[in-house]
Image 1 (cartoon, helix red, strand yellow):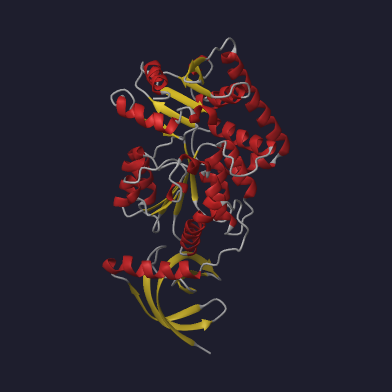
Image 2 (spheres, rainbow, N blue to C red):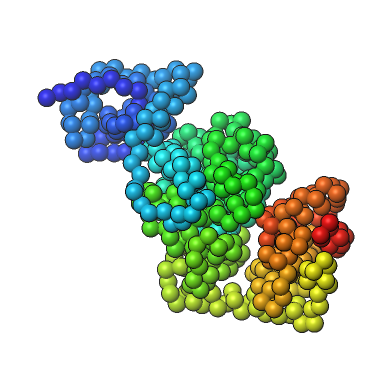
Length: 448
């Protein structure tokens, strides 16, 4: 028995079937098959005809029309909304279930529905992930259920140059979406995001860094803990954790990935084991030695091969320990308002573009020193960088690093062009020759 149908559908894919071409279309609720014509993925068609094979929803068309360009956007939005409404999420227990996580639940579900609907409609998705354990863990979680192209981002800024490079890839793709994972919230990323928006590309930001609310208006969807908690504690709900919660309700067991992401950023929202810390360090080590491209499949493989994993961990740990011990020899603190301030020349032990980087060395220095001291602040510097690490005791006494970064960027506009972070971990980019000057200014601000 034939069934008459009439619908607007978006072409999701083209493929061969039994010696002939086949075009798959979705109206957001159902997927249909018609004999392929000169169509392309992402194109919207008006179809009227009858279904002859109910199992494959094969349509024998009586009329097919291409939609006028001025109507495409409105029609696609209706199709997408139908697809979003039809998405079925898993009733999975949350990985974290505290008050902040509960407030984020609706936003996490919104992103999950958006991504599942986009996948169903054949949209091209580019996932850019930050090159550390947090970003990598989140990217692995998302790609367990989402088909997309992945690209490692070796900078905390999505620059205009990044955007132009992506536009060269995306301009011929079907209704593309760009996901920025574990970066993109800062003001410095504004120009890049605005370029994507101007080109009609949807942008989804999943990040835990303090946001610049004004430039984020150019993004289509933002998932950030700062949306429900406007204080430093928000940063502990790291991007990899957020991505893992998305994957969790899409049917992926992502708890381990969430924990390694938290371990990488020293977050305490989940109970972290030594194994979680080791996974995070291995991912950081691999990312530091992979300076380009799509390395995600290799990262997954390294986590699964036990002998390789143990070897990578030992190498990474030995390198950080050696670098930190070299600097700790003879290190003496300066006490400022009850804070034990340590200053280190990180370039004594750090080799550019090799592991460990300044950030890893500074973290190990802080971890070692904070075991013996109460209120500890570590300030490490390089030619154009200042890396900062602070403990709870130091923050209570006036060393909130996020606030200090904001103040020094305002006071030294001509010499400190960028920087930011959390209250416990932050960094400044300074003009060559001004690192020590910036450190002196930071120290003078303590307690004031």
